[in-house]
Amino acid sequence: MEFGALNIFFRFAGQALPQLLDGFTVTLLLAATALPLALALAVPILALRLSAFAALRIPAIAFIELMRNTPLLPQMFMLYFGLPLLGWRVSGFACGVAAMTLQHGAFFAELYRGAVASISRRQWEAGAALGLTRRRTLVELILPQALVRAIPAMSNQIVLLAKDTSLVSGIGVLELTLTAKTILERTAASFEVFIIVAILYLAMTVVLQTVLRVIEHRLAWRYA
Amino acid sequence: MNILIRNLPYLLTGAVQTLYLAAACIVLSTLLGFFLGIVAATAARPFRAAVGAYVFLIRGVPVLIFMFLAYYTLPAIGVHINSRIAVGGALTIYAAAFVCEIVRGAIASVPRGQINAAKSLGLRWHTILFDITLPQAMKLSLPPLVSNAVVTVKITSYVAIVGVWELTYAGEEVVERTLAAFQIFSGVMAIYFVICYPLTLLARFLERRLAYVE
Image 1 (cartoon, rainbow over the protein chains, first blue to last red):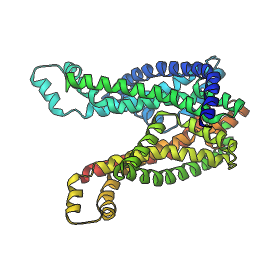
Image 2 (image 1 turned 60 degrees about the horizontal axis):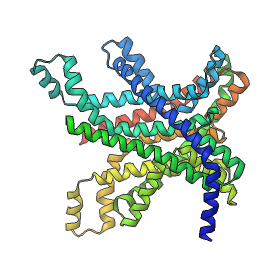
Image 3 (image 1 turned 90 degrees about the horizontal axis):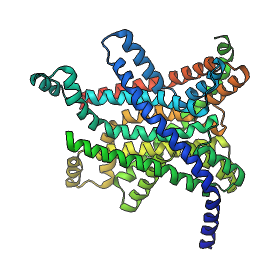
Image 4 (image 1 turned 90 degrees about the vertical axis):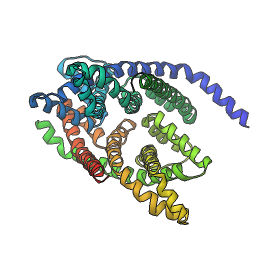
C-alpha cells in the first residue's frame, strides 16, 4: 500500500514538475529583481529620513510609516489597475516588482537606520579623535559594524520578500503559487502539489538564509 | 474623490470583515503560539523537534500556499466548512508560528539564575513556569507580539486572492466597476493604516517603557 501511494505520488510529480519548475523560475526572477532594487531604494530613503531638513525628513517618515502599516496587496492592485488608466501598459511582473520594492525598501531603510543607531557614540568619537572626517568615520568605522548587526534582521526581511513574491499570483503572473493553483483546480491532487511547492519554496528560503549567515560570519570575522 | 466617497460605506463593510478576521486570528494565534512557544522552550526533545519542524515549514513557505491548501484540500477530503473559516484557520496556524518564536525567545531570555533559584527553593515545574518564567517572558514578548499583530492584520488582505470577501476584495470589486483604481485603493490603504498605525504606536510605546523599566 505504502509503495503504491508513493508510486502515484512520483507519477504525478513527474507530470506536474516541469510546469511547477517553470513557475519557480518566475518566482526566483521576481525575487532576484525586487531584492536588489529594494536594498538600493532603502539607501536614498534612509538619507532623506536622516536629513536635517524637515522638508525632506517628514515625507520620508510619512512614506516609511505608510508602507509599513498597509498591506502589500492593495499597493500592488493600485499599480496594476491604476497605471493602465494613466496610459502606461505595465506587465504584472513589473507591477509586482515595483510594489515589493517600495514596501520592502521602506522596511530595509528602517533596518539600516536601527543598525547605524545601535553603534556606540564612542565609535564616532574615536573616528573624530583619529582625525577622520565624519564621512570617512561613517564609511570606514560605522557602516561595516552596522552591516554585521543588520544582517540577522535583514535575513528575516529578505525571506519575507522572497515569500511575498507569491502575492504576484493575485495579479495574474504565472509564478509558482499561481501555477500550483491552476494544477490544483485541474487535478484536485492538493497534497502532492503542496509537498512539491513547499519543498521548492523551502529550498529558496533556506538557501537565502544560509548564504546570509555565511556573509554575516565573514563580515563579523573581518570587522567585529 | 467623489467615487471614493460614494463607495466608502461598501469599503467600510469590508473593513468590518477584515477586523473580524484579524481579531479572531490574532486572539487564536496568540493562544496557540503561546502554547507552542512554551512547548518549544520547556518540553522534552521530541515535542521541541516537532514544534521546530512546524516553525521551519511556516517560516519558509508563503502563507498563500497554506490558504490554498485549506481552501482546496479540506473539501477534497470531505470536510465541508465555510471557506472563510478554512482560510482563517490557515492564517491562524501561520501567525501562531511567529508568536511561538517570540514566546520561545522571551522564555529563553529569562535569566537562568531565576530558574535555578526557584529550583533550589524546591518549587515544582508548573509553579516555576507560571509564577517565575512566564510573567517575565510576557513582559518581554509584549512589544513584538503587538508588532506581530500588525503583520497579521496586513496578511488578512491576502485572503482576497483565495476569494474571501473583506476590505481588499471589496476594493477590487469597486475598482472593477468604477475603474477608479487610485482613489479606491488609496481609500483601502487609508483604512488599513487607521487599523494598523495605532497598533504600531502601541508597540513602540511598550518597547520604550520596557527599555525604561529594565
